[in-house]
Amino acid sequence: MMHTSGFATRAIHSGYDPESEQGALCPPLHLTSTFTAPTADEMGARFAGEVDGHFYSRISNPTLDLLERRMSALEGTEAALATASGMGAITATLWSLLKPGDEILVDRTLYGCTFAFLRHGLSRFGIKVRTVDMTNSDRLIESVNDSTKVVYFETPANPNMRLVDIASVSKLAHVHGAKVIVDNTYATPFLTRPVSLGADLVIHSATKYLGGHGDLVAGIVAGRTELIEQIRLYGLKDMTGAVMSPFTAMLVLRGLKTLDLRMQRHCSNAAAVAAFLKQQDQIADVYYPGLQDFPQHMLAKRQMDDFGGMIAFEMTGGLQAGKKLIDSLQMIHCAVSLGDAETLIQHPASMTHSTYEPEERVEHGIPDGLIRLSVGLETISDILDDLDRALRMV
Ligand code: 4LM
Image: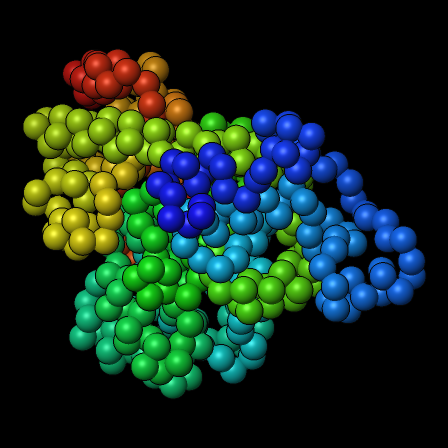
């Protein structure tokens, strides 16, 4: 029933029946590390996977179970896995799917710590990491081959907003038997469902829009049951131990109830901010998929239901002007992270993407002067007034 309901309905109801919990409207919080069984044979059978049933909260827990079912209902996947952070989701997934000698092909622009994990994690253990500009289909066709086991990208990419065509990359990767993993943190399932477009796995930093209130750190992986169980039993249980706490799961479940409403406001506020920035003489370039002249605007219309809450821009006065702008804002705070109720501004080259060497940032499309804005849920006139006043001081 629930898989055919609307997005907001699934985000509020799916996977939970109050009657199963004495009529409690809100699901209970299962703060327990371990679980009892009536007999040794029953417990042994749970460990062997012969019967359903929880036995230890590093593997499964009823509160996490509900979040996992709800996320799979939103992403349209068979299953999902909750993790301690977005990085926990990324590392548990990639450690599970790759072994020495395998190759992972990644897009040119990735979140700074994802890039650092590929360099300091996977590469050091004999996994070959290759980078390609996935917006260029000729380059992509040349780069995928039968040693490619995983194709990995973000769309829109953090921080420069480049989009990758999920359907066409998936089609190409599958010809070579590679698995496609999409980091859907920026778009959320409200805007894009990568698995419906052909991807195998979806990753989220649930710290961002899914939680939505800047009060937690969390991650999600969603996809086919067989892959999710592999990641749960190897990447999560044995390799990273990056398990989400039940309390965090409860907060993410609470955040999800308003994801639909919040995303609508994030999108309309961001569209207004992008239009405003576009008109300012001090701003040289604005990167927002909803702008008519955004190079991949047509792809954005095909692949996204709206254009999201994230904007990147460069000022005519370069980095110094960007820093002056950040320092002159009053309501808008300088902070990393994104997708919160508060509008946040930051400088990727010295903050979220400082894990790249300066010359690497040029290669990976992260200019020093780029400024990133996570447009929040405040009254739009207050966001515009703050930007307008600060721009006059630059
Ligand atoms: C930031 N981002 O950009 P945890 N994937 C994407 C991300 O943006 C992030 C993660 C994964 C930022 C954090 C400081 C596209 C994080 C990693 O932070 O481990 O939940 O997610 O500002």
